[in-house]
Image (tube, rainbow, N blue to C red; front, side, top):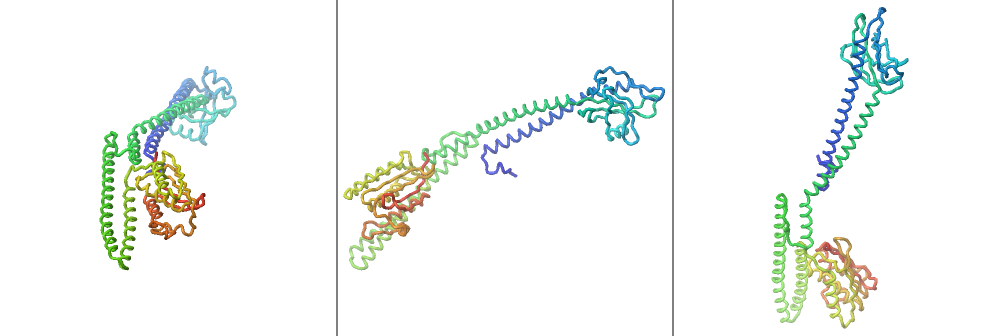
Length: 462
């Protein structure tokens, strides 16, 4: 089962988390094991000193005439100094699972070494081998104690020899070792994590390069993948190149079919219009009028089909400023008698993600419509909305359009003024082409007093 942190994440994140997580887990377990081994080794050395003290007590202890245990005169200064941290004691077990002190070191003063009942039970069960345990000293300090039960000559009851010492120095050494080990392993873990990140980045660099090259193809800066890739990625690059070639072939076939269809339909319609014009009368007028409607419909749907085919192609880019400048010059000449002045502004780097002919048709229809209805001034503004979208706004100072009529004029063949020239397909063409490219058309009031045509279109990344 994939953890939630890895689900849907990038390859780099997955590889880094898995490798770093495994490395850090191994380091953590290793640090804990090393600390435990060091602690055990330190305690074993500590217990050896206590065991030697018990052996000396056992070897030199005797029994007096009154069956009292006589301890040897040991020369360890710490055992002679009160509460020094090093203690010994000779005790005898009682019937209730405890032990009563018979002889003790001067360092204990008026205190006794406590023996847990479970330790006494173990000694009774297996006399001879010493038993180590942890306890507390007269001042509450932590002690490491060792107890062994033995039988002294001349005494019927067994005795228990105890030796204990303050384990604070051992604990301090263990904590110091653990701190040093933790620091070393943290540094090692950080180094391993950095090495994993570098290794993953270097290892996946060809994949990143493949992604960048595909983006270059999509943006129109390249036609195919040209770089050499490792053997694992070469088949993928070849398949992508083949897919792009196939896609281009499909688009070209669609364009050819659309052109053939346009020619096949327009020719019979032209013949019908010509024949109807040569036979004046009601029937000829009906045929001429309906044939013209059919021609408009054919143009509309073929234009939409061509736009849909072109949007499937990769890498088409059109400079917005260049097209707007060309349209402004042309329309100002066409509407020279009306005195139309077109004020346009667009960034030189702004590009439309699509074919030039389609942008010419979108912007040209909108600007021509504004020139037709304006009093003399048209304003065109183009800019970027985001890295993937651009806006195009065409404003005029004409009579404008009531809000309740705006949805109507976008419909095919709708016209505000039947006496004005034109087919009424201008705004419909703009809407259809914008939708084919995944854009949108919106009509609004212009700050110049007339109509504002606002378009949102795909933008080619710079």
